[in-house]
Length: 241
Ligand SMILES: C[S@@+](CC[C@H](N)C(=O)[O-])C[C@H]1O[C@@H](n2cnc3c(N)ncnc32)[C@H](O)[C@@H]1O
Ligand SMILES: O=C(O)C(=O)C[C@]1(C(=O)O)C=C[C@@H](O)C=C1
Image (cartoon, rainbow, N blue to C red; front, top):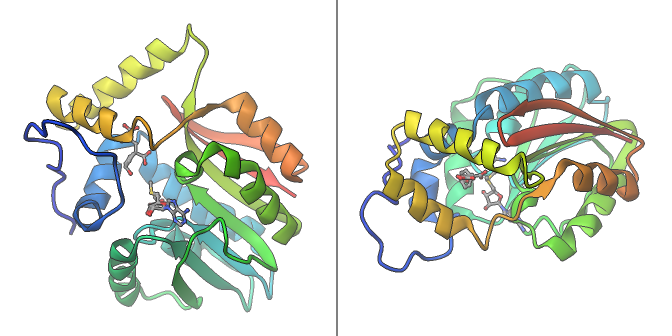
């Protein structure tokens, strides 16, 4: 079991930019469950989507895999034969723990975890790729290029699962922000913790609107984009090549 996230419980003075370091890796399952509305459903359904879109003799990628939650959900969902799943993250602390969870898992699809920058990693023969709450951390100027690389590596009929924190127009933004704030409060975060986490992620997690995501996925080479899930300000899209 993961430890409880109390990283922002005490006053920090100046709050440093958020990083996926050892302290975050240690509490990550608790942190993401209490911070991202719909996280558990998004992970579970990535297994169902992988079941539908995985093709025989292909690769499935979990880009920014953290502890491998989506990797393992896809591993249990895949029905096609001779697939392998490659989980990539540039945080060694995350991957160390991902290997631990993988060792406890009993499914049979081969899984390889790789410590690398997803913006430079050569992708190929992909039937399903997941970017589960990861593109939001990639610098804006690199996002289109990464999606183009994914689309180019994706087989016809293959899919990308893109889950993101969304930005909204001026009327909707305060409504969604208030609901997200209450979601965090309901999960036991204090107002100080919420405020300090917000300053930590302010320059690091840059959300964009649904329109921007859909247009860019199409510009990258995906022919159809469906928002299959949304819970408050977090949504997940299925982009089909
Ligand atoms: C919010 S977490 C992703 C959660 C995970 N996909 C899940 O569903 O549990 C973001 C992850 O992306 C990783 N990451 C961010 N930028 C990256 C990059 N350029 N290359 C590889 N990994 C990156 C971080 O280390 C972190 O583990
Ligand atoms: O938006 C927030 O307030 C968050 O805490 C979101 C978020 C995320 O979406 O990845 C940010 C960092 C942590 O990884 C967990 C959750």
